[in-house]
Amino acid sequence: MKHKIKHFRLKRELGLLELTLYGIGAILGAGIYVLIGPGAGIAGYGLWLSFIIAAIIASFTGLSFAELSSIYPKEASTYVYTERAFHHRVLSFIVSWVLIVSGIISAATVSLGFAGYFASLFGGEPIIIAAALIIALSVLNYVGIKISARFNCVATVIEISGLLLVILIGALFLLSVGGSNISNFFTMPSAGIAGVFTAAALIFFAYLGFEDIVIMSEETKNAKKIVPKALLLALTISTILYILVAFSSLSVLTPEELSSSDAPLTHVVDKAVPRASFLMSFIALFATANTVLILLIVMSRMFCGISREHSFPRIFARIGNKSTPYISVFLIMFLALGSLLIGGIETVAMLTNVGVFVSFIFVNLSLIFLRYKKPNIKRQFKVPINIGRFPVLAFLGVVSSLGMLFYIGYIDFQLLLFETAVILLGIAVFKVFNR
Image 1 (cartoon, rainbow, N blue to C red):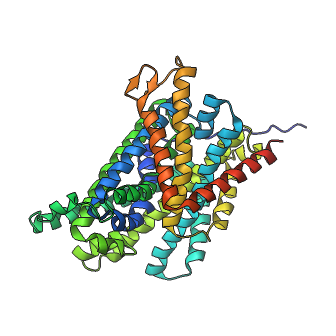
Image 2 (cartoon, rainbow, N blue to C red):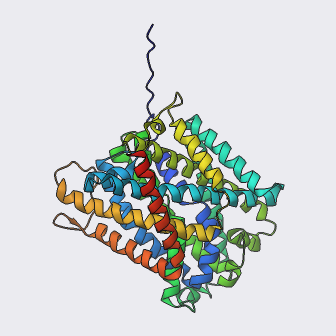
């Protein structure tokens, strides 16, 4: 007697609201809650300018992602874009590989950030708390995208409320002093404009997540139209919130006070509302947990998508009866658990940025190449400002990403060496699985 084999597929559960909130939740989180302190220590009152520079750099590639996702709404986004543009599987694999490695390390590091807040409120051993969080959120990831999206929506609203509280406190503080310290925001730090760019290189980590929206294409209704809209909305809303938070935080605290605090936004709120640290720490729990959940979801979908493209064993592309890639989900969980011993968030932020800038270079180049190789392919969204077929903003995305890579290398050459090792490991992994 023959048994029928069931073939499960990913469900299209996400609409514009859910995907936009998903994107905002992916962008907000650990970055702004932790890195605003070190950023203020580097850029001083010019921190708001660092956020604008980082936002401009992010928008170049964000627009490229928007156009490419309207052509190829696939979960293996960066792999598919580069493969269609260059027809080079090793290159496509490596571009995705550096994102996966960065994502896994970031998930582990942010989970330790969650553990720090949790331990300060309720006690416990941080590494055990972090491991428990990764396991619990991996189970949530396995259960299905719909319930994960609901958790994400709730957590994102809580995250935004925390940032709005900081913005409100800053506005009230400015009014109370009659705006006398506004002139501070137009003074350069002691490191000059170089300090502003160095801070931009660091806090760019706080913008990461917009590129993850396209990875959810196969679980989004009418993805070719909704994904570009959600991506641009999420990036715009997050940028406005970040700039206002930077202004507000530095209205209440000096750059020195902000940079010396382990929980900078909690310190801002606590100065205006005594004993409010519990509230901000509670909000930070949701922010960090939400970041970890999104990273786990995105990395498992990338594994699944690359397997579908025959660059990983097909077993990782299996979809279970929960309509989730269950083998990839639990593989990412074990890899994240094994990454809990990586260094602090500042080091990881810079390391992640290196990997991301490498992938961004090739995403923008993919758009440029596809404009000429497939000029007549249907595009639901098209990047503005073009010279004929040539996308000017995509070119600026390449130039700015290269510039940030060189700048990070100038600050800490070891990060580039580590990323080179990651790339060489990726080539070895590809060769093993593609003999």
